[in-house]
Structures are given as C-alpha cells and as structure tokens.
Length: 184
Image (tube, rainbow, N blue to C red; front, side, top):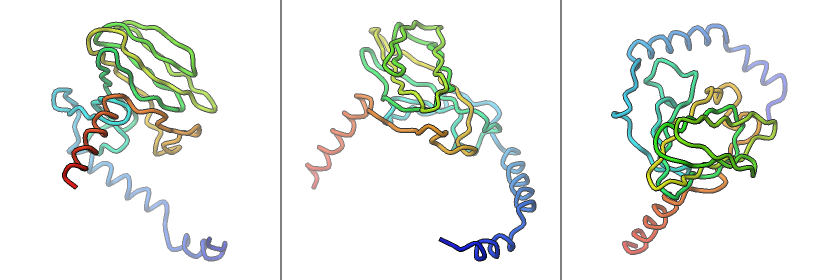
C-alpha cells in the first residue's frame, strides 16, 4: 500500500477536471454513431447462468445512446426456472409473453400471469430472487432497472451473487464437459 506522500505525489501529476472533460468528449464521440433504435430481432439470445437472455441495454454496451438503464428479456421454457440470484432490488419485471408463472422473493411466492409486473424491492441486504414458469409454453419477462453499476459497483451495496444456475445452462455445461472428455 502506498503511503500518503506517494499517493499525493501521484495524484498531483493528474488533472481530474481535464480528465472529466476528456471523458465527456469521448462519450460525445461514441454517441455520435450509437444506436438510437434497438431492434429486438437483431439481438441474439444468450444462454448464461441466469437462463436465456436477450440484452437491450447492458452496463458494458458501448454502441447505444443511453447507458442509464439495464434492460433485458428473459425467456424461461415450460416447467423450468431462472437461475437464483442475490440482488440489490429496484428492478421491475414485466411478464409480457406466455402464460402463468411465479417469482420467489426471499422465500415468499408471488404468482403472476402475462401482463403483470413484478417489482423486486430494494433491501439493505439485498433480495434473493428466482422466476418459475408454470405454463406449457415459453414465457418471456422484460426486466429493467437503473444502471448504477458504474456508480456503486456491480454489488450495488448488497452483493450480487448467482446462487443457482438455470437447468438449461447446467445441461449445456454437462454436455460441453462430456464432449471435452471424449476428445481429451
């Protein structure tokens, strides 16, 4: 760890105001060519530990004009579930396609149908959240929250942990490992 005088000397070599202006200029240049219209049919579905997701706005996207929100569509196959996460909360989830399902927040079950909105409350120690599909067809949930990842960190003050993976991701991992073992 640096002592105070070393840190002071290092900081004196910089102009944080000039760096802020440079960042502003870089952001302006990036926004000149950024996407204003995000077309859902151009976005790929990814299978990750949380499930099938299509990202409209993400903290690491640098080709869109706004970075204030995080927004994604999550698809859950019939009879399946999302991964289970510890999150800060402050997210809204709109059940916009498919049938009935439910969400478990901190052990309490909330049943919903398409066109319903699930609100993940902000809690000091976060909330444990998982979505379930009770129907015989895919459901899709549009999720949106403020993108404060760069302001307060990905943990958002309460921790951000993947507590359990969705079944489809586990199967993909198991299949990949089996193929790798056969080749090895």
